[in-house]
Length: 144
Image (cartoon, rainbow, N blue to C red; front, side):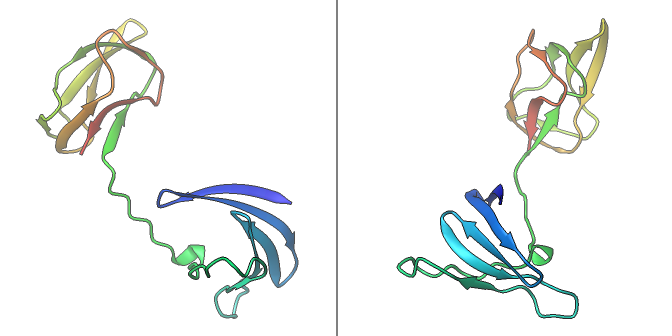
């Protein structure tokens, strides 16, 4: 038995795979059991069949993973390339910025590093302040 947790379009799905054989798998999604026919080369796409809990409304069929298209339109956050201390912020929320424009200065290993915009856009949020100590990969500025 394997357990997985997926978040799709903000909805959380807890999936437990109970049994797998050559042609199908017994799975449980958020407490509802399903028999899933496994996709094999040359066969039609996988189908989902309801097994238990007939009082719940039917669930719309799910596209096989190879056909799912995810559209992400969230603003992009500029991340810290290395750990250090923020010593200056050269932009404000609402500023229009160009790709390559210096947005802040990060001191790391006694050296000042200019952190530049990765794209054109508008500063939506500044997640750090002067004097903050940050780790590598931390969101610094959100640009939309």
